[in-house]
Length: 363
Image 1 (cartoon, helix red, strand yellow):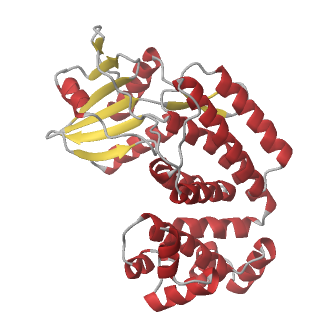
Image 2 (cartoon, one colour):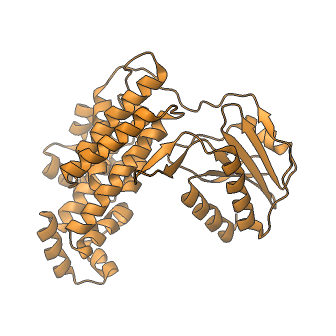
Image 3 (cartoon, rainbow, N blue to C red):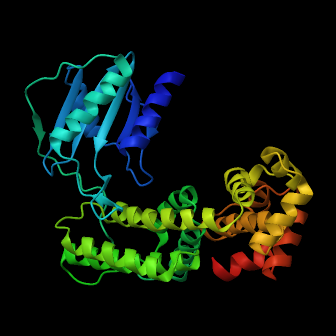
């Protein structure tokens, strides 16, 4: 995939929330631009699309989701409409169940034009497939302490207002979280779960600095919308999108409440955490003197710059200690410590126990 095509697909996916997959002639996945919880593209759909030779091949699936293929040189570019995010007149984003068929066609036509600079020829025939594509189902499993930990981890990230970290860890929440069941009616159960998730997001947002009145006002609007929805085709994506609403509010608050230089330093740390070797490189990247940055950071956040970095690295390490089988020495290296001894000493200083004791206690 060349650089220009990569940029077109990446920007288009981010602008429209359309899941885009790129396959070779041998049906090998070589790239994807998708929402965090997008599933593996079903091979059965890929085979069906390969049988069609239009400039833009389109399929409508029985539950009204849709997919389309654009042929580019030796590649197949697949757009899959499973779920997407829209804006409504209440001035916040929410997850809509499905993009309408006509709008999906227009979205794919625009993608085709961006790639080729001309509009595609499309067959008048609409191929409808009678196959199920329920991508996720809520499973009832016993609540566990690990589920409690992953829930706390996710809410802590919401309070930081960092959307990239949130999307990174949300999949782990889906796998390990305590997702329960309120009743036997599927839609009612999913609405109750979404309302429960909204309550948690509200508390996390207040912890992150969002005014309680604004947080609860937003919560009321979202819960009212949840009650009005007549279909929730993918509960996990639905819940993730609600979390994004709160994170975006926290993000704006944090930007307004701390000095721009300190905010930029935090963003640099989040983006480059495991590769940071010294605080000096942060100051240099921001064009500020180290002493001034350290003074301002401590003044705004109440913790030193180096302690903030170490705490974030340890948060990542704690996640790996609980949710992976990696050796502790490998975890120390993965999260950016120069040596295992420095990692172990720093961990014990902040957490009051060794990494091994932490793993045995919480895993």
